[in-house]
Structures are given as C-alpha cells and as structure tokens.
Length: 178
Image (cartoon, rainbow, N blue to C red; front, side, top):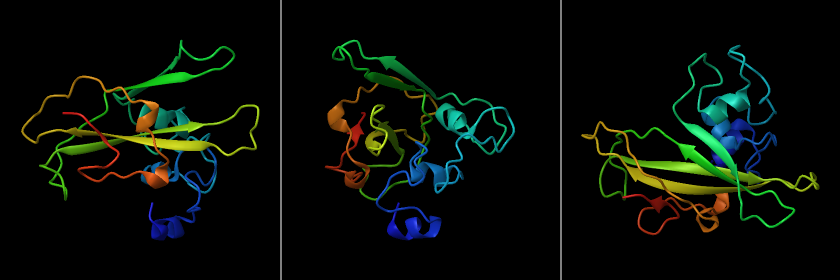
C-alpha cells in the first residue's frame, strides 16, 4: 500500500501485517476487515465461519456467500530435513477474468495473482513473522470464455519481500504463464 493509504487506514508502513493476525494489510483493506485489530476470529456475516476461514476459502467474510471454487491445500514436504516441518502448498482454480489494457502490457486480459506466505518460528514467538510474496501473471483473452488450465510451480527464488516486489512488465518479479 502507498504511504497515503497506510496513513488513511492507520496501518504501520513498516509492517506488512499491522495487527499481527496473519493476514497482510492490503488483503484486509480489500476484504473490509480491520487491518489494525485482530478480527480474524469474528464472524461478521453470522454464517458459522470466522473471517480467517472465509479468507482462506476465498469467500467474503461480510457476506453469506457460498464457498468459492478456489482451494488451498498444505502438503508436508517429504524432502524436509529431519526434525523440521516444511510445507508445500497448492492453490487451485483461481478465477481469471478478461481485463482492460494495462500500461506496459502486450495486450488486455493480464491477471496478476499474488501468492503470500509467512513464516513464524513456533519456539520463538517474539520474532516477527516473515512475509514473502510471489507474483504469477496469466493472460486471459477477452474472447476466451474457457477456464485456464495447467499448473505453475513456484520456487523459493520466486518469493521476495513485499517491499521489493516489482510487478513491472519486462523485467519484474512476476512468473509469466504463457
């Protein structure tokens, strides 16, 4: 978020997650949850699912909507060193939509999907979470009504600190899917 937005919402421009609830401030602002207080256990739409569960399921925490098509799955990493727990995760069926022409893009239909991750040290909770983000760029032509298929595998090198993310065309950090 820009400094002006941080000031407007009262968030800390030195933190990705001002209230420390595990959801980055830009996500909370977009979904109209409170970025300055931990409200992830609240159920503002009274549908029996707390805000954090709804965000993870891709639904609106303020509306009694049906579960979205998008799914997230954590899978233990079989190659993790002994005595450690490392997780791989899968994101399935994100919605792609036709879009207008963006400055610097080769044409319309560009969708940027940001994949956020955070690490916390269970034995050292006083150490702040470390957030990282990766960008995956798909193009969905306006004339194509079909769902995109295929898969993308992100590596550790695809994730950067949020403040260094460059989503520019022709040299940015986005993994481009043709």
